[in-house]
Amino acid sequence: MATNGTALPRPLGLLAELTHRCPLGCPYCSNPLALDPRADELDTATWARVLNEAAALGVLQVHLSGGEPASRRDLVEITAAARSAGLYTNLITSGVGVTTQRLAALAEAGLDHVQVSIQDSEEKSADHIAGYDGAYARKRALAAAVVALKLPLTVNAVIHRANIARVENLVALALEMGATRVEIAHVQYYGWALKNRATLMPTRAQVDEAVKAVEELRKRHHGRIVIDAVVPDYHARFPKPCVGGWGRRSLNVTPAGRVLPCHAAESIPGLEFWSVRDHSLEEIWISSPAFTAFRGTAFLPEPCQTCERREIDFGGCRCQAFALTGDARATDPVCQLSPHHALVAELANVQEDRSYSYRRM
Ligand code: SF4
Ligand code: FES
Image (tube, rainbow, N blue to C red; front, top):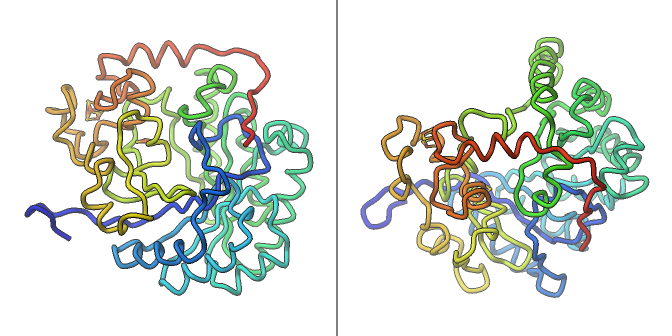
């Protein structure tokens, strides 16, 4: 693909946020502060068109997500549309709202993979974090049904101060659930999670322990389960190449049809997002204002502009740069070379024992 004589990368993945409705109330929810109401959600035919356009654009994988995607009555039809577009289809679910029969229908429709989130290895704590009694038991039941259907299962464990000491138990639980992969994902602090940052923030000592535990567990369980984990942002020396670089690898379609370069992009004021209701996905990818705003590295200030890592991490995360400095073009302050890095170190040391502010739609 080329535009203005410059080669543009093709996206590989599309996150389809089918709905913002969700039965859980996780305090680290990454969905935007203003949620799309049900009445604004795209209909089945529009999703089918978008999935076909995605495949034509080069997308290989679609992640059916939310909120809770099972809150959509047409989840089976959307899954079938993804399959018929030739996309590898991954369902990202809280596990609440997917019955065994519905899962079988999804498998029949062509679902390739299921990713279930778990809040903790201890039932009481897991339900407390999710803000939903009985969530843990329903997740276990869904995982068992996924394995019985011989669908590959990934367990996604979001960790923070309340559960970081149980990394070993979380991996053991993922194995017991029949997962072939577990993602140890530290909370990312934007959107709703910012409200709970000091309550969720682990201590430096906890993070060091968890990093050691992951290394040991990888050796112990080699060949049985893949353990994906990265050092959490606030404790890292260099930032991650967030979303593989803005406008380089992936797109997000919101429930109402706005197309975003990353799931938190709406937290950056002043960006103009085009909708699939008015434009094709290809037009949006190539020339929408939001996708072109931070594509490449030309916009980056010093020290990134002359840094040898700029084509590796693209200056880090735009949403985090904005959340911490008020300037989305700034070097991500997670980077030890950023002039704002001291702020990250300071925030990483703020821990408060307060009740969670739960996310409710
Ligand atoms: Fe990455 Fe910029 Fe830090 Fe270099 S200065 S490591 S490009 S964030
Ligand atoms: Fe938006 Fe990182 S979450 S660029």
